[in-house]
Every structure is written in structure tokens, then in C-alpha cells.
Length: 325
Image 1: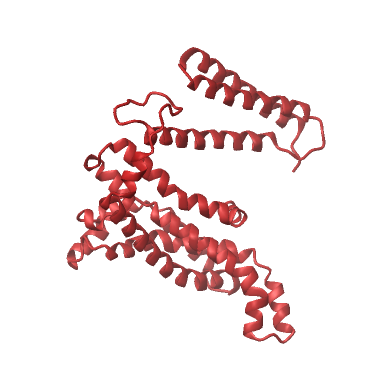
Image 2: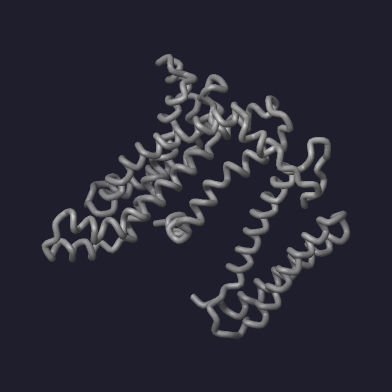
């Protein structure tokens, strides 16, 4: 659907009003160097409004609402990251009051990487997430194939139930899981966290695999088989270029999601020896030197794998997460 002149003008007006409000707020309320950051955001929004007016009656398929939404998403993503970086790199004796860093100190990153508690928690998160992701993928791939390619009874009901489990709050299930772990006498073990983590990874992996397999050109596989190709030839001609890269993206996304969960690690662990990294930062901040700086620095380091995944497979990540059925 091509954007109409009215929608472009309304989006441009919205961008101009937002830019005008942000510019005036920066002038009246924001002190120091941070004022220039508010000015930069205001200028971007106002330039967007001008461009929207210039192309309002053209045949271009650019939606100004999409452009404005991307700009707002960038603002609300980059500014918190900038504040986190400022907290992480500020000197220990300095109270951070500016959004922009003033005196950058890199020592906190060295302290975080050398901390035994953070390193142990990071290893726990990686191990638990890796095992849960591997088990989930082994179960999710055939389940998604059956939901997409087989005439399974009540498959729509199964898919709805799958989404319901995916959207269910894990904190509501933490109590029953904790009681069962205490009953079996394994509460506080590192690897026991794999079982409740499956409540997150298995429905997520299945949902993403369903999304992946519904987009595959199955007619190509049927044509290859009709030409008399063996299983090995079918794998090289169809599965290897079409399926394997998508499954790799699903695996990475599921692993990152499992690593970032804090509910399971915070509620189903008995001590620091079995606690995951997000739960450690949530519950053990008082045990760290410079807690604000340490938590900010650890969060930035923990963000690196997610950024690398997004940079490595950007199109597949967007297609998997940006489409629903």
C-alpha cells in the first residue's frame, strides 16, 4: 500500500512537533554538553518533517511513519546504551550527572573480566543456555516440520498452545518448579536449571522454526526428488543452502534469549555457585565494587554476542522476528 499525502503530512507534523518540544526542553532544562545531544535529536526529527513535506505528493513508496518509528526506536535504544556506557566509564569518585561521558575510565572493564564471581556466573549462563538450546532444537525442528508439512490433527490448537506457553510469565512457574526441585533434592544445582529453561527455549525455538519452514521453497525440494536425487544430493541442493542457515539463526537467537533470562536464575538457585549472570547482577550488586559501574560494564559486555548475531545474520533475524502467522 502506497502512503497517502495525508499520512505523510500527519507523520511530518508529528516529527516536527516532537523535534520542537525536544529542542525547547533541551534549551530550558538540560544543562552542559547534554544540551547538544538534545539539539541533534531535534534536528533529525525536524529534517524528517521537511523531507516528509517535500515528498508528500510524490510517487515514492517511503512511509514517513516507518521512518519516524525507526528514528524513535534508535533514540530509545542508543540513549540508554550511551547512559550505560557513561556509568561504566565514569571515575569511582565522580557522581555521574551527564548523559555524555566526561572522563572515560576503562579500568572497570578489566575488573569485571577479572572478577571470579562474574566469570563463574557467565559460564553458568552459557552452559545452561547451550544445553537447553541444543535440546530445544532437537525437538523443535521435527515438531515445526510436522506443523508445517504434515496434516496433523488439531495443529492449529497445538500452535496456539505453543504461543500461550511462550507468552506465559516464567515467574508464575518458578514456585512449582522450585518445589519439585526441592522434593528431588537437586535444588541449587547448576545443570538443573536446564529443565526450567526449556520452558523458554523450546516454545521459542519451535515458533521460530515454524516461521522458517513456512518460508522455505518446498517445491524446489520436490523437484529435486522428482529428478531422482538421493538423500545426500537433496541435502546438498536444498537443505544445505536453504534450511541450515535459517536453523543456525534460530539456534543463535534462542541461545541469546536463554542467556538473558533473569527470572529462572534468580528464583531457582540456592547460592552464588549456581546463579546465572543476569541473576547475579540482579541480586548480588551489593557484593561488587562500584556496583553501578560494574553492572553497566557487564551489561555492555553481555550485549556483545547479541550484537554479533544481529550483524552476522541481519536479514534472517529480521525475517524470523519480524513476521508472524
